[in-house]
Length: 396
Image 1 (cartoon, rainbow, N blue to C red):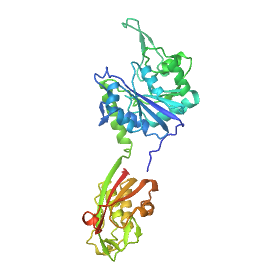
Image 2: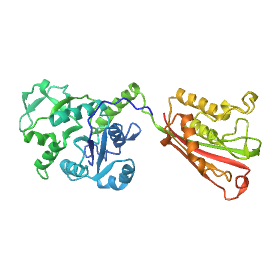
Image 3: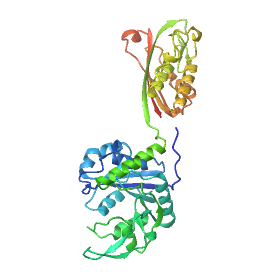
Image 4: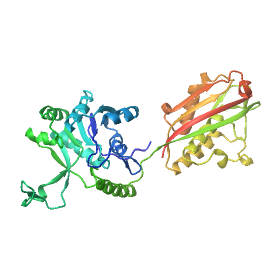
């Protein structure tokens, strides 16, 4: 399957995504706020789950969202824990969920859905080398300090040395553990690197952009939507899983070869059909075409075309593979169920799997073949026909 080129990151990494905030400045709960057509947290989580080097992904959710969505996230491979009263309490909960083999930890805000793989990779690599790394963006505005009462400006700061701090803030595990142990209970730190400074340690600076925005206010949402629109116009869309369903039936008659999945099976009857009658390949091909909304095999090989009488179904499959390639779709897996009273097909499972695997140029582990009988019921149960159902998954 095609994988978007990723920046190299070290091994034994985990991400803790803090998504337990109440959204007070937004005026409503923001983690599941719709952003670019999806809940915001979906985009944030995808930024990390799309990087294969992350061994563990931990979502820290509010009690309400943990009850509502926790099982769904768990089914997708995320660990989920309940958020605490403060950021540090939530981080402690996420940290406690990590397994012993994790060596590097990325801590990210759930409300930063536009973080790039490049920033994530650079922060992790820098943390692996120096212990800690924090992304930051240069300030564009002049920054001044004000008097204690806020009435007067007092001093202009050197803007070139200032950065707006972002996430993911990345740490060697032992460094993050030291931060959590040093953080004072019930103190609401703005970020964990604030505690790092109190330990006399320094975090490496990772250059980042203004698009890695934290969505905190309604105005931020407008800005982030604009960044997302620009991003979608520049980057090719990530491939999505699509599924197709296929079905075929052929009557069994004497004098014809019985071919299933490209394998000739010794039997006194074979499939009556315009081609070789291979119901397995026909059902698979229809499922593949259906997954990309490209019709069915009868469109490309009409039964009225007498020049293709007796055509091998492997050639039909070859045509379908060409169509998939033109549509930039890649097969992920196929699952086939054959309904037949005779012959008994269990002894032929592996041969059919290997044949289908070869014809589709698919790893054997991604091909499933099984058969059921109709217990003597109907045309199939009387040995007069064979039916095949197929489901195919593709990335497009």
